[in-house]
Structures are given as C-alpha cells and as structure tokens.
Amino acid sequence: MMKHSIYGLTFEQLTAWLLERGHKKFRATQVWELLYRKRVTRFSEMTEVNQDCVALLEENFVIQTLTEHVKQEASDGTVKFLFKLQDGNLIETVLMKHKYGLSVCVTTQVGCNIGCSFCASGLLKKTRDLSSGEIVEQIMNVQHHLDQKGEGEKVSHIVVMGIGEPFDNFENMNNFLNIMVDAKGLAIGTKHITVSTSGIVDKIYEFADISQRVNLAISLHAPNNELRTQIMKINRAFPLEQLMDAMRYYIEKTNRRITIEYILLKDVNDHVEEAIQLGALFADIKNRVYINLIPYNPVDEHSQYQRSTQETVLAFYDTLKKQGINCKIRQEHGTDIDAACGQLRSKQIKKDKEISINS
Image (cartoon, rainbow, N blue to C red; front, side):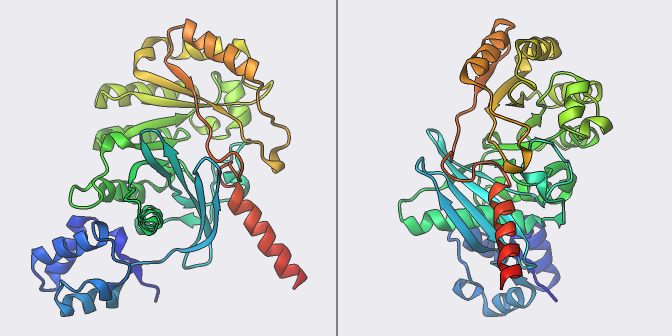
C-alpha cells in the first residue's frame, strides 16, 4: 500500500492524528517545525522527536514522493522542474525570479480537462487530481533547491497557475493553501498567493464564502460569449454573464481585487474592438479588477495561434487605459526554455514514448 505524503496534513490534522495515537500536542509542533523550518528530508533526521513518534510517522507517511525528472534553467533565472510522481505521472513546477521575490507556479492536476484551445497544458487530458501533499511538496522541492545553493533565498510568492484547474481540485487546493500560510511553517502571506481559475462559477462563490484571503485570478481571454466559447469550451457551461455575477459577488464578499488574465492571440482576440468590449465589460467594477495582458507562447500542436505584434499589444493596452482600466503587459519569464505551461511535460511524454517504441 502506497504511503501518503506527510505534507498533505495541515497542522491541525497532524495534531489530531498524533493525539489519537497517544502523543502530546507539542510533538506536532516539533514535527511541523522540522518539516517546514529546518526542512528535513528524512524522518531519521528528526532527532529532537521521541523515537516512538518518529517510528510511527515513518510507518504511516513518507516525506518525499516527487523525484526530479528534468530541470531546465533559463538565462533570466527561471527554473522549470519536471517532477515524477510515485505512480509515474509527470507534472511541472516553475520557479521565477522577480524584483519583489521568488515566485513558484504549482500544478494541481495531472493533465487538464478544461480544454482551452490555445493551451499546452490541455494537450493531455486529466488523469487525476494531485493530493494536497503532492502540491505542497512542489514548493518544498523548490525550497530544497534554493537551500542547496546556500544563498539564503526563500520562496516568497506562490501562483496556483500550473497544469490543471485548481477549482476542479478544490478541497486539496484549499488544504494546500492552509499549509502554506500557517505561521508556524513557511508562513507565506495570503497577499503573496494567487489562485487562478478558468471560471468554475459555483466554486468562485464557495471560495468567496470560505474567505481564504488569497488573491483570485480569472482566465478570461475574450470579452464576449461567442469568442470565449470558441477558444475556451468552459464558457458553454459558465457563460460570461454568470462569470461576471460570480466575480461581483467575490469582490463584494471579500473586498479584494480580482486579476483578469488575457492572453493576446494574433487576429483572434487582440483587436481594438475587443479592447473596447473588455473595458465595457468591467466598467462598473473597473476599480476592483486588474487586467494582465499576456504575450502568447506558441505551442506546436496549436499552430492556428500566433503571438500578437508589439504594435497590436500596445494599441490594446492604450485602449484599455483610455477607458480607465488598470492593466499591464506581463513580463515574460523563461523565454529560452519550454515556456508554455505544460509544454515540457508534453514533450517529455512524447520523447519517452518514442524511446519505448524504438527500444
């Protein structure tokens, strides 16, 4: 029987688990600090903990379930990891360097069923959800990578924007968030965490109600139903009218701003006309949204899409600004490696299959 990752337990869950087995509450604090502050990688390194407790943990859990399969480093400091899970599946995690700190983009599912027509992540359909432990371990493995460099660097920001739809793995994603913000562990501030969704409306309402206090981003990519349905099939289930109502509810309930993600596709959604429509869509809440204009990373399998020209991007940006919309053109990271989310995984799986056929 495969053991679960100890990283999947919140502090409260770990405490309850140990109490049920006759251990004192302070043992949970010891174990937690060893995992997240001293960042041990083996239970045998928990020398401060009673050996009976260590043996119990080792019998029921593992610390490391991910192995590094491929690592790519870009000239701008971006590092892209391809991790292999215990069942052999592959996932991607990305470390990005910003002026404000070190950000990690985590994956929440093996594959994706949302099926956005421009996205490399959806080339391979969803196999399964990641456990909360597997999501946490992505952060920990990146932090171990930083620790090994010996420069005292720490993960300061998290974006839940990797492979998969986070709101389609809602419970595990929330567990992950609770573990990340815990003051006794990594203590990453809620303002430094962003969760992105393609627009699962009922989960946006639920996310607002549980008040995680982290940032919310919506992958929009089109200002009208016809165009959004063309490039994002989720719009058939949750059209823009429903999505806009959910966003207004989130803003009212949490008093937080929403980030709107908009990938610019040449001659598809990048005309001034779409910029005018986008401004009008958010006219009543323009002070509560922030639009990220994202340059498209071409994907071989989606050859129908190309990157918008710089002139077009600037015209789109200027049109939004003239309507009083807060927006920016997102800085790119890792342009000299497989930059598109899911691209490294897709290429590696294809490579592994070719090796298998030829061997």
